[in-house]
Length: 338
Image: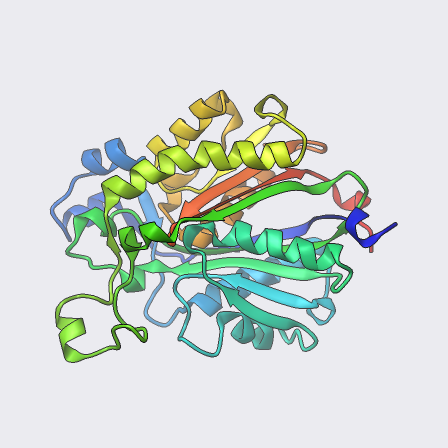
């Protein structure tokens, strides 16, 4: 078998979300909004919020520990840790290095990946290539966010949308014909201003002025991001399917980025998929950015909505602007190659 012939799939999966639930009713006391308004426009009913002592690396570590246990893989056997996040604990060291230390995964290389809400699928595709190339055998891919810490709780256009959480998978070689079959990654940097955190970097370092102007919070042009998402979700899913030699008719379950129920419904319509073939949990967690898809994937699996040999499509969009999709043929543990 040549390196490119290796099949790479998910050997284990886990998630970690904060205990605190913030409902739409709770938000009514914080900002001018209503439960009906939020549900009608987004489908979100509640979201999880990390406490002051919990950072992104804490949630990432919790999700990684569950994924390792699910895969039956020891942290010492992990070769690489990729953390997709827009909310690192700090600029450096990376969240991935913090997780490596927490897990005592001493032989693992580690880096963070910044692709917004598309980050987990970017990381999944990146990790797959390392294994196909024969460079690594076992890789942790984590999507983790504490978005509540960068929200302006006076801005009803953003604070109602986001939540905190983490999801992780262990990637490794699997039986031929299973695992990641195709993918599509893309970006349009001309849309960068539509969704950004303006201050704190080298362009606009932190200052009293940047703090007073609330430039360390998420800024989003919701209408334009919505238009972009409506267009790109279906296109990206179809591109990944074509890369895998499949069509939408072959899809058993679509697991989209959980940003907005209207965007999810639009993607399903473009793919001509009934909503029974689309996994939705946006009502429970809101938009958890890079954590969204792995949290949804774990819930779909544990709820029995993913079966042996199912064809899954994971697709997301995010800041950058970016998009990412991949096609997976699901494989049971007994087909795993050690």
